[in-house]
Every structure is written in structure tokens, then in C-alpha cells.
Image 1 (cartoon, rainbow, N blue to C red):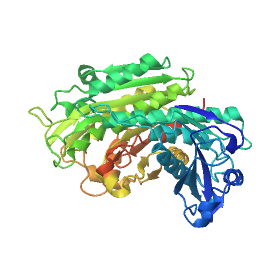
Image 2 (tube, rainbow, N blue to C red):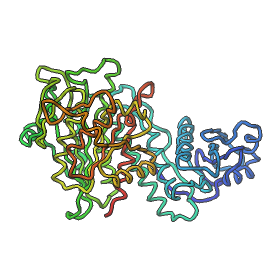
Image 3 (cartoon, rainbow, N blue to C red):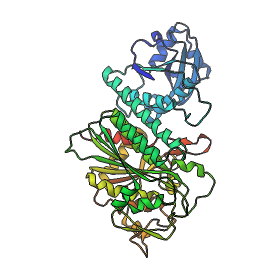
Length: 495
């Protein structure tokens, strides 16, 4: 897709489709007024007839308008002009791209210069337009014999925002395109079936990333190497499977060597049967998405390399397959983690925390400025937040506040849950230092309490993306979250 900032009066823009905003009660934007005056009242006739009210999300197409160079005009409802927030702008963009996607329009021009977003800087719209265009262009074809047709649109342009340098907006378009592609990459990894996207597949993807980007290096630890390090908690998850577990370590070196890195740790359970604590059969096919935390980390690493961020980042993927088998870990088994803490495995379906705790301990060697793990960890997070919110827990309020703000800015939102000492006792075990589950209540919190036992020395945050990373039902598939949040966070870090 080609993106550009294109100036000029909207009626003179050469495009297959030009998009203009109609506000509430049929109020025409400045661009719509200009086109209407030249085009024989082609827009006001529609608004005055009541066919389009300007309600947020509405769209109406005009073919072959008189006196206008563009072949079509797409009227996009913007709602209340005085309350045109970033959230509303994204809805307008999504609906416009959806409507335009039904056309064989090779080029789109968004004439939105007069649309002022109340809660964002001017260049934000350019970045988000490119991101949403990439998102709308995603097609899953990897395992289909009949491939979906690619989008007809090949070029998208945006009218320059008033008071913002063209170079700034062009840079924003480029960044948005890069973020959108990274989100699509995370989607693709999450959508691949478990017989393709194995721990070895993820390791190969990380190695290819290192070959493509000079700032990235990749190291893959085998099961033997992990055993020598004492990662028996992580390895206990993989013992029932023929697929070898991998600890995949990627480093982006964008700053000087003295700058401590930010570390991202992703849960990479490439298929989760629940192990001996077997899951119900219904919807078990969706358990291929249990590696979406790892997918978000590798996609974020790709994105920051392409953005050339001047910051040091380490991405760690704890990758394994959780299967029942003759050697599989049994409920009641006790394993010793890399930290030396012993863990009573009361439920083998609470395996994500077992791979993460060793990866978090391994991360200590990098002396991180911040340590964030990302995991499709608990059904309780889905029950609490549905698909809309990333659950956030942290031992550092300053870090949590920054992540919450990044979620708001990127519209990849998070909500903080308490990590109080009162919950820790639910993890008590009669036979080990800690149990891997805390009972039927407060499941998202007790899972984070478990991980907090392995991160006491770190500025640490945990993102439970069990609800946000995947859509169930007829629109089943990975969402690519929380790549947007993570990239926003890393772009803010001091160089």
C-alpha cells in the first residue's frame, strides 16, 4: 500500500473515491461544502432528504459526481463535531474503509483537514489512517487452497492537517503503516494452526527477523540448555509433547550498550489441551491462540526495528506445547523453578504461569529498566473484561500508570486490577513453596500473584490478554493486540 499527504482543493483531487465528513444533523464539513457547491448540491440533497443524518458510523456513496474529478464521493458520518475524539475518528476510519473495501477503488483520498480531533495531536490521524488501512487489508490465506482476493486499493492519501508540517505527517503515515503491519503479523501467527505454528516455527520466525534487521540478534535455547539452567517449571509443561520447547531470546540494540533494556516476555503455548487436566472439547480448536503473547512480542520487535527506535529491548518467548501423554506432568507433581522455588502443580491447565516464571527469572540477567509479560493467561480475564480490555497488574504504580496512558493513547486499552498481599495466601501449598492455582475466585489476580513471586526485584507489569487477543464466534481470529500498546510504550522511552 502506498500512502501520501496530498494537498489541493478536494474537487480537484484525482482519486477513485474521496471521503468527506458529514456531522450530526446533516452539517457539512468544509470539504463537503466545497464539493457540494461545485457538484450541483449533490451532498446537501442527500442530507436534506434525510437519507444521511451524519450519525457516527454512517456512510453514503455518490457515484460520478458532477464537476468533481474523483469518480466517487463517500460521505462518512462523524457525529458531534465538537466531540470528535480519537475513538470516534477510528470508528469513522474503520467504517469508511469497510465501505470503500466493497468498491474496486484503486485509490482513496481522505479529505479530513477540517476534522479536528479533540484529544490528539494533529499528526495522530495520519498515523491511525495508515494503521487502520493495514488492519482492514489483512486476509488469512496461509492454509486455504482458494485464496481471498487482495484489496483493490493500492494507494491512500490524506489531506494535510492545518498547522502541521508535511514531513511530520508523512513520518506519521510511515509509522502507522509499520504498526499496522506488525499488528497483522501478530494476527497471522495467532491464526496459524498448532501443527504449523510450533515452538520451532516461532524460533525460526525470530531467527529470520534477526537476518532481516541488523539491530536484532536472536538466540534459541534448547530443552537441554534450559535443563542446565534449572528451568524445570517451563520444561514440565512440554514433557507430554513430541514438540520440543524453546526459549527464544531476541535483542534489539538501538541505544548504546550502557543503556539498560526494557524486557518483554511472551507466553508462547502453541497449543493448549490443558494437559492431564484436559479442557472440554468444545472450542478447543481455539487454543492455538494461547501463543498470542509471544506473537505480540515478536511482532513488536519487528516493529521497533523497522521504526529504528533508539532504545534497547529484549524480547523473550517461552514456547511450548501442552499435551497429555505418558510423560506429562500430573496434578500434584512438584517441580523446581529456575529461581529455586518449588511449585505444586495442582492443575496442568494453569501452564502459562509455569513457563512464564522461568522466563521472568531468566530476564533478570539483562538488568531491565522495566519488565513486562504478556500472556493469554486466565479465563477469569475474559469473564471480567470480555474482549475490550487488557487486564493489567503491576508491582510498580509508576509503570502501571504509563502503560494505562499508552493504552488510552493507542486505543489498545488496559485496566488495572489490585495486586494486594491479601490474595497471596490463596497460593499456599502444603507440599511446596507455592501452588500454581489459587482456587476458583479472583483467578486473574492470583495468577499475577504467582508471577509476582518471581519478579520482586524488578519494575514489573503483567498484561493478561486472554480476552483482547482473540475474537470467538463467527468472526473468530486473532486481533494482534496488544502490539499497539507495547509499541506506544517503547516509543516513549528515553533514548
